[in-house]
Image (cartoon, rainbow, N blue to C red; front, side):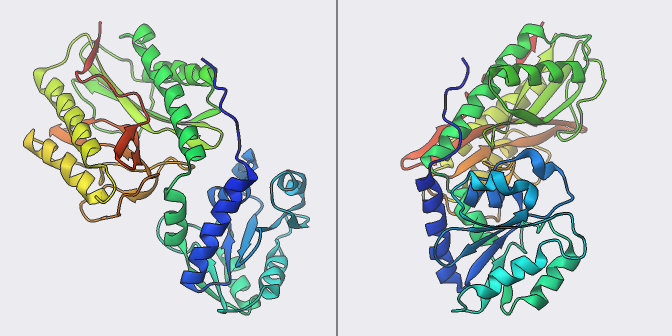
Amino acid sequence: MKSILQRGFTTAEFEMRATKAQQKMRELEVDAILLTTEPNVRYFSGFHTQFWHSPTRPWFLILPAEGKPIAVIPEIGASGMAGTWVEDIHTWASPRPDDDGISIVASVLNSLPARFGRVGATLGIESHLRMPVANYLQLTTLVSKEFVDVSLAIHELRQVKSVAEIDKVREICRITNVGFDKIPGYAKAGMTEREICKQFGIDMLMEGADECPYIIAGSGQDGYDSIIMGPTDRVIEDGDVLIIDTGAVRDGYFSDFDRNWAFGHASEQTKAAYRATYEATTAGFEAARPGNTTSDIYNAMWKVLEANGALGNDVGRLGHGLGMELTERPSNTATDNTLLVPGMVMTLEPGMVYAPGKSMVHEENIVITENGAEWLSQRAEPELLIIK
């Protein structure tokens, strides 16, 4: 079933995002926010292009204390930005290393009212500027306002999704499930990890994904030792366990979940490890409700893993936020303690080292609702699937 979900967002969606950000700006006492990364520029403008893959040119979006965002972008993007709700667009002929838009950005920021004398920028946790450090330092000398970090505020705004955003994540999860459901029909011993993943990616594209930028695989006799490498040309053999973890994209929003299979047979220890991670996902889902925290989710899942003999967890967390990026804040850790509120899209990702050199990781996607949580991915089977 090909997707019929409408692409993009209404102007009202962007107005809502700007209004919420401007309310936060007043709390933080900043006169404007300078946005420079693809997700943040897209979130507030709707400017959606693959051209961000080119690292040559910087792009700037300025959110003032009132009104619509102001774009300061290379000329090559002018027509694309004009197709969004943004009206005030300043351009220059880029690349221009001696002044790649910096003087225009400074001029716009200096022209805005200076109630607080501060400009917000994403300078902190899980953020970057996507512009040369030298240019940023020059900008701070040209602008008659102090630059302060607003990265956490931007994360907080983006981590609570609108209904329209949740629908986009739900749809790419549906597409991803279709791809996973087809794997037992063609995967077999004698194929390589790469061959299986290639067909998996094709199936998702055929079902409606725009791209599949993240497809990893790990395999080994009765278990695997890594969930971030591959796929490789390793040939699957009888007795192997295979994990595939994917982040597929439709209309700018990600899915992120995995599936595990054994080929021919699996040991009782491996089957038990799979069952433990599945049960941990259940516990995490039950803890994922408004008023609880990400640490409550972590503790609920880790309790199950520990009770089932987990030797450790080398991932560092048991899930995270999800949306315009494959991984977003917050993280499900023992110390994160982010309050759960309706609209947060999360992954539940319990993982355990169950024997030396052998890990089992299970991942699903959910959204926090008023009454608890809702599955966005179609849940995996409760027992490890054996491909004969």
